Length: 176
Image 1: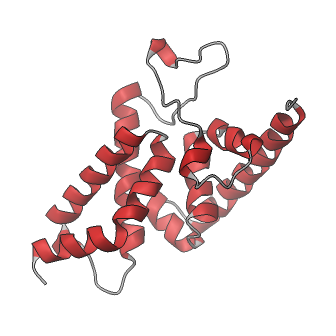
Image 2: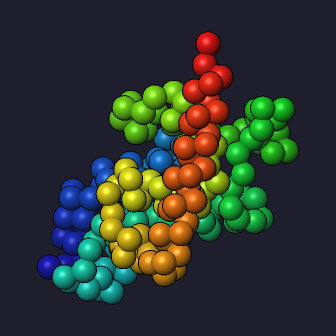
C-alpha cells in the first residue's frame, strides 16, 4: 500500500472517531477539526512507522492527545488545562473558551449534571475518563496513548470517576 492509499484508508476508517475524540478534548468544533487535520498530516508523514498488527485507533488517539497537549502548552504556557470559574465565564485573561455544552459531542445521551461534571474535570482526568468510558479502550491502550503505566491509568481513572461522582451529586442537588 502506498502513502496516499494508506491515508485515504485511515481517514475513511478512523476519521469520524478521531474527530469525535478531538471534539471531546477541545469542546470546540473548529479546534477539533484543526486537531484532526493535524493528526492526519502526521499520519501521512509517519505512515511507514505504523506497525501492522498494532491498533491504529490507539496510534491516532496518541497523536491527537500529544497534539492537544502541545496546543494547551502553547496557548497557556502550562498544562493541564483549567476551566473558567463562575466568576470568569469568559476564561483566563478574557480569552473566550468553547461555549458548546459537552452533551452536544457525546451524542446527547448524558444528563445535564453529568455533562457539567465532565466538563469541570481537569483535562487529564477528563481525557482518561473519555478514553476508558466513552471510547471503551483497554487500560493498556490508554497507557500507550497517555504515555504512562497501566497502574497509573487505573489510579487516575479511579480518581476521575470519584471526582465525577462528587460533581454529579453536587450539580444534581443544584437543579431546580
